[in-house]
Image (cartoon, rainbow, N blue to C red; front, top):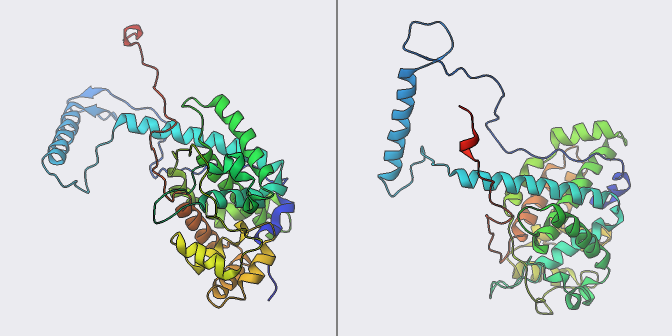
Length: 349
């Protein structure tokens, strides 16, 4: 069978526009004017009556009593912490800025996309399931690790990440970003750019139509869980040698065994083919020779030939999300910073 490479869409990457940031809010807030006039009734104006205010306070107090009177959280009651909401917004805004920085860097260096993907995978593949050590901890940044045979040719991708980190740290309000976070976010940005480029290619190179196609049929919403896993800590020394395969020389059986060792199977091996070296077509042709992997290679090949690529894209995002957290404890308060206190004495009432 003839293969259509996921990475073969790269030549159309340069003219694309930045992806709109995904907003996971299900309750958009619409601007408008709220009347707070207190009226005991009898008025036709759209106002808030004293009775309504008392009812609201009563309902709020009742819900607090229900929430505090049982050890089992009620599915109907959720107490929001204002500090948590502020931290989430800070992290979300910071992450949005990071993606813009990475998009700009990748757009100017699209030839590095395959290396960026392999860089992220090789940082993950140091994970040891038995000891729960290694994994996506940024250890690949150390010279003794990036110079290993399995990481040959990845120095330029690491340099791109390092340059992006300098820019990101210059505007970060919550401290420097970890290499472990940035390397995985770089892989995400590379994938998003290539998916969009694929949509443009399917529209005959028409950028506007390609953007519309990806907006309508793309799987941007699938990145929600990945985006929440933000707050990895960097390793302080290289991970042990011998944990990562040299993908260009490894057999399919060795690849299968390595994926099984970290908790994955032939399906995930097939969907991660774009990460297994610079030539995805050659990698998939080799994977297709194995009876355990070939059905998945063919499935994703058929998916990439469709308009939406849904099966391939969703499985790839899901697999990368799981891999990008192996062995890591996520600090959900990372990159948040104290909010400037308001001086209420200066307010005019």
